[in-house]
Length: 128
Image (tube, rainbow, N blue to C red; front, side):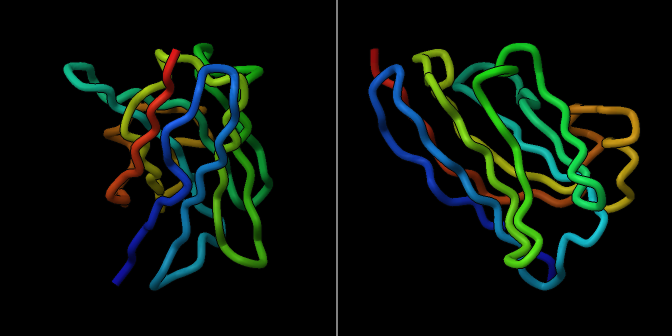
């Protein structure tokens, strides 16, 4: 069974960094579109970054561009999200998701509805 497992969340002070990891089990990413999303209490789920694992092509939401970096380790089949200069408004549950049809990456689409495989999430809390 295909599963995605996030790790790396935690509580940090503003200005610090965290690196989230999304490991796939039951399959390898091959040429999939993988995205990172976040959801804060009372807010809608927001896509923050995406990567096409076939070419390492990436795209970002404007709210995180320049601070977050998404990358793919082909040997370990892990997608990372490096988050620098964290702000209190980055506090949220972070999820990784895969679009196995890869269409979302072709359109640089960070809409949650376009992704069909989801992890359980990892909490990130940024204190001011």
